[in-house]
Image (cartoon, rainbow, N blue to C red; front, side, top):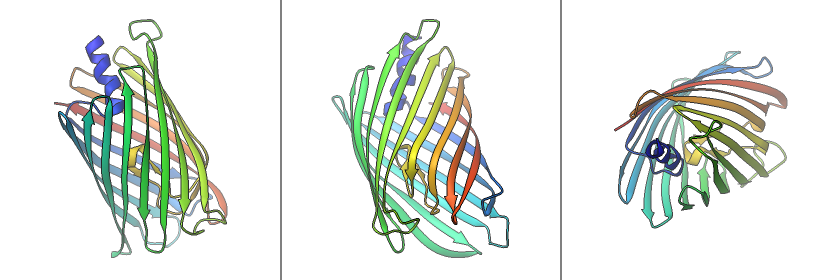
Length: 273
């Protein structure tokens, strides 16, 4: 059990075994939004051989609208290289976004990023990430310091916990969303590990636009101003190699001067080898 716990907790720092994870999500928008619904699916893969870890993610996002606006289709390819030494991890990555609408290839956007992480056994970790998002007529700089801490006893009735906080400082080269070009946003999460179960509660507080999240694997590039997000995920370890996860999140955002909501329903399967 202690070995399984170590693998589970270290995976939050990028020390997981080789992993293959297909995932899918359905997004439902409120009546105030011009969007109707969206589907997002893909496959994530990592290969770890000391001292290197390579990550790749291939995803597709399709959004349909309530009016006659053509569907929005986006194909994403994210590649990340990690290098581990002593208690440190450094990473470099790129997210490529190929966008099509009305059957025309309209644009190619990208996010370049890097970061450094220091971890102290299974006690705590801290680091900072930098993201440079390059769009057609503007760019975005984002600096994200982050901190995580472990507590509790995995073998106790309450299990063990991992708490993390990310602070996102976002700087747009020009005011393309509202009259603001600077944002400060915080992501907080709490995960409980108990037996084969892992439960995560998360929230994002403070306004943001064109934010990069989840270590570069999530990009909010549609021009909305997000106000807050809250959600929950539950995963179950089927055996030493396989696990399943389901989740839900709800976000409030501003679109065309109207406040709207989105509900995201998520599911994934992970296989370690």
